[in-house]
Length: 196
Image (cartoon, rainbow, N blue to C red; front, side, top):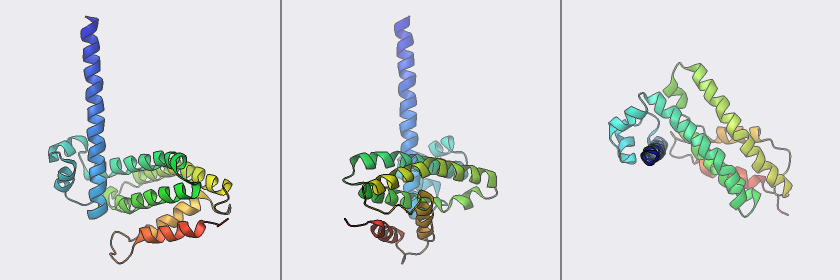
Protein backbone atom coordinates (compact mmCIF):
# COMPACT_ATOMS: atom_id res chain seq x y z
CA UNK A 1 0.00 0.00 0.00
CA UNK A 2 2.85 2.40 0.74
CA UNK A 3 4.26 1.80 -2.76
CA UNK A 4 1.04 2.97 -4.39
CA UNK A 5 0.96 5.98 -2.06
CA UNK A 6 4.46 6.90 -3.15
CA UNK A 7 3.51 6.53 -6.81
CA UNK A 8 0.47 8.75 -6.37
CA UNK A 9 2.55 11.35 -4.51
CA UNK A 10 5.27 11.17 -7.16
CA UNK A 11 2.72 11.55 -9.96
CA UNK A 12 1.16 14.56 -8.22
CA UNK A 13 4.57 16.19 -7.78
CA UNK A 14 5.39 15.52 -11.42
CA UNK A 15 2.08 17.04 -12.53
CA UNK A 16 2.73 20.14 -10.38
CA UNK A 17 6.19 20.53 -11.93
CA UNK A 18 4.72 20.13 -15.42
CA UNK A 19 2.01 22.69 -14.63
CA UNK A 20 4.61 25.17 -13.32
CA UNK A 21 6.80 24.61 -16.38
CA UNK A 22 3.80 25.09 -18.69
CA UNK A 23 2.83 28.26 -16.87
CA UNK A 24 6.43 29.56 -17.15
CA UNK A 25 6.36 28.84 -20.90
CA UNK A 26 3.05 30.66 -21.20
CA UNK A 27 4.36 33.68 -19.25
CA UNK A 28 7.54 33.80 -21.34
CA UNK A 29 5.45 33.70 -24.51
CA UNK A 30 3.11 36.43 -23.24
CA UNK A 31 6.08 38.63 -22.32
CA UNK A 32 7.58 38.19 -25.80
CA UNK A 33 4.28 39.10 -27.45
CA UNK A 34 3.81 42.09 -25.13
CA UNK A 35 7.24 43.42 -26.12
CA UNK A 36 6.42 43.32 -29.82
CA UNK A 37 2.67 44.05 -29.75
CA UNK A 38 1.85 45.60 -26.36
CA UNK A 39 -0.34 44.30 -23.55
CA UNK A 40 -3.45 44.55 -25.71
CA UNK A 41 -2.11 41.88 -28.10
CA UNK A 42 -4.72 39.26 -29.04
CA UNK A 43 -4.78 36.21 -26.78
CA UNK A 44 -4.55 34.01 -29.90
CA UNK A 45 -1.09 35.50 -30.59
CA UNK A 46 0.06 34.58 -27.09
CA UNK A 47 -1.43 31.10 -27.41
CA UNK A 48 0.35 30.59 -30.75
CA UNK A 49 3.67 31.79 -29.28
CA UNK A 50 3.25 29.42 -26.30
CA UNK A 51 2.04 26.52 -28.42
CA UNK A 52 -1.18 26.13 -26.41
CA UNK A 53 -4.88 26.66 -27.00
CA UNK A 54 -6.60 29.87 -25.97
CA UNK A 55 -8.60 27.91 -23.39
CA UNK A 56 -5.36 27.08 -21.56
CA UNK A 57 -4.57 30.77 -21.19
CA UNK A 58 -8.08 31.59 -19.95
CA UNK A 59 -7.98 28.67 -17.53
CA UNK A 60 -4.83 30.07 -15.89
CA UNK A 61 -5.63 33.77 -16.37
CA UNK A 62 -9.36 34.55 -16.63
CA UNK A 63 -8.81 38.25 -17.43
CA UNK A 64 -6.20 40.21 -19.37
CA UNK A 65 -5.25 42.02 -16.15
CA UNK A 66 -4.58 38.64 -14.49
CA UNK A 67 -2.24 37.71 -17.34
CA UNK A 68 -0.47 41.08 -17.40
CA UNK A 69 0.07 41.00 -13.63
CA UNK A 70 1.40 37.42 -13.80
CA UNK A 71 3.82 38.39 -16.60
CA UNK A 72 4.91 41.42 -14.58
CA UNK A 73 5.61 39.32 -11.46
CA UNK A 74 7.33 36.64 -13.55
CA UNK A 75 9.62 39.23 -15.11
CA UNK A 76 10.38 40.88 -11.77
CA UNK A 77 11.43 37.49 -10.40
CA UNK A 78 13.55 36.72 -13.46
CA UNK A 79 15.26 40.11 -13.16
CA UNK A 80 15.82 39.65 -9.42
CA UNK A 81 17.32 36.18 -9.90
CA UNK A 82 19.53 37.31 -12.79
CA UNK A 83 21.45 39.92 -10.77
CA UNK A 84 23.42 37.61 -8.46
CA UNK A 85 23.91 35.06 -11.26
CA UNK A 86 25.35 37.71 -13.60
CA UNK A 87 27.59 39.03 -10.85
CA UNK A 88 28.93 35.54 -10.15
CA UNK A 89 29.47 34.70 -13.83
CA UNK A 90 30.45 38.08 -15.27
CA UNK A 91 33.99 39.07 -16.11
CA UNK A 92 33.63 42.29 -14.02
CA UNK A 93 30.98 43.83 -11.78
CA UNK A 94 30.50 46.67 -14.30
CA UNK A 95 29.87 44.13 -17.08
CA UNK A 96 27.37 42.29 -14.84
CA UNK A 97 25.66 45.60 -14.04
CA UNK A 98 25.42 46.37 -17.76
CA UNK A 99 23.89 42.99 -18.55
CA UNK A 100 21.40 43.32 -15.71
CA UNK A 101 20.44 46.86 -16.71
CA UNK A 102 19.68 45.62 -20.26
CA UNK A 103 17.37 42.94 -18.81
CA UNK A 104 15.77 45.55 -16.60
CA UNK A 105 15.24 47.90 -19.56
CA UNK A 106 13.64 45.10 -21.62
CA UNK A 107 11.33 44.44 -18.68
CA UNK A 108 10.41 48.13 -18.41
CA UNK A 109 9.43 48.34 -22.07
CA UNK A 110 7.00 45.45 -21.45
CA UNK A 111 5.72 47.00 -18.23
CA UNK A 112 4.57 50.31 -19.65
CA UNK A 113 1.15 48.95 -20.65
CA UNK A 114 0.46 47.65 -17.15
CA UNK A 115 -1.32 50.76 -15.88
CA UNK A 116 -3.76 50.75 -18.80
CA UNK A 117 -4.46 47.03 -18.36
CA UNK A 118 -5.23 47.47 -14.66
CA UNK A 119 -7.38 50.55 -15.32
CA UNK A 120 -8.98 51.70 -12.07
CA UNK A 121 -7.23 49.24 -9.73
CA UNK A 122 -4.96 51.83 -8.11
CA UNK A 123 -4.39 49.74 -4.98
CA UNK A 124 -3.36 46.74 -7.08
CA UNK A 125 -0.98 48.86 -9.14
CA UNK A 126 0.58 50.37 -6.00
CA UNK A 127 1.04 46.91 -4.48
CA UNK A 128 2.81 45.75 -7.64
CA UNK A 129 5.03 48.81 -7.65
CA UNK A 130 6.01 48.16 -4.01
CA UNK A 131 6.75 44.52 -4.90
CA UNK A 132 8.87 45.71 -7.84
CA UNK A 133 10.95 48.00 -5.60
CA UNK A 134 11.26 45.44 -2.79
CA UNK A 135 12.60 42.79 -5.18
CA UNK A 136 14.75 44.86 -7.54
CA UNK A 137 16.29 47.68 -5.49
CA UNK A 138 18.41 45.27 -3.41
CA UNK A 139 19.62 43.51 -6.57
CA UNK A 140 20.61 46.76 -8.25
CA UNK A 141 22.27 47.92 -5.00
CA UNK A 142 24.33 44.71 -4.85
CA UNK A 143 25.50 45.18 -8.45
CA UNK A 144 26.33 48.86 -7.94
CA UNK A 145 28.16 48.17 -4.68
CA UNK A 146 30.27 45.48 -6.37
CA UNK A 147 31.18 47.84 -9.23
CA UNK A 148 32.07 50.60 -6.76
CA UNK A 149 34.17 48.19 -4.66
CA UNK A 150 36.01 47.13 -7.84
CA UNK A 151 36.74 50.79 -8.62
CA UNK A 152 34.79 50.58 -11.89
CA UNK A 153 32.23 53.29 -11.12
CA UNK A 154 31.93 56.21 -8.71
CA UNK A 155 30.05 55.90 -5.45
CA UNK A 156 27.70 58.85 -5.82
CA UNK A 157 24.82 57.01 -7.51
CA UNK A 158 22.08 55.11 -5.69
CA UNK A 159 20.23 52.10 -7.07
CA UNK A 160 16.96 54.05 -6.95
CA UNK A 161 18.46 56.90 -9.00
CA UNK A 162 19.84 54.47 -11.59
CA UNK A 163 16.60 52.50 -11.88
CA UNK A 164 14.56 55.70 -12.13
CA UNK A 165 16.88 57.05 -14.84
CA UNK A 166 16.62 53.83 -16.83
CA UNK A 167 12.86 53.95 -16.45
CA UNK A 168 12.79 57.46 -17.86
CA UNK A 169 14.95 56.40 -20.81
CA UNK A 170 12.47 53.61 -21.60
CA UNK A 171 9.36 55.79 -21.70
CA UNK A 172 7.82 55.82 -25.16
CA UNK A 173 10.19 53.21 -26.60
CA UNK A 174 7.32 50.92 -27.54
CA UNK A 175 5.53 53.59 -29.58
CA UNK A 176 8.40 55.37 -31.36
CA UNK A 177 10.28 53.27 -33.90
CA UNK A 178 12.95 55.98 -34.24
CA UNK A 179 13.88 55.76 -30.56
CA UNK A 180 16.15 52.98 -29.28
CA UNK A 181 15.88 52.89 -25.50
CA UNK A 182 18.36 50.04 -25.23
CA UNK A 183 20.99 52.12 -27.06
CA UNK A 184 20.44 55.00 -24.64
CA UNK A 185 20.70 52.63 -21.68
CA UNK A 186 24.02 51.33 -23.10
CA UNK A 187 25.27 54.93 -23.32
CA UNK A 188 24.27 55.50 -19.70
CA UNK A 189 26.05 52.36 -18.48
CA UNK A 190 29.17 53.14 -20.53
CA UNK A 191 29.18 56.63 -19.02
CA UNK A 192 29.27 55.21 -15.50
CA UNK A 193 32.49 53.32 -16.16
CA UNK A 194 35.64 54.86 -14.73
CA UNK A 195 38.77 53.73 -16.52
CA UNK A 196 41.58 52.64 -14.25
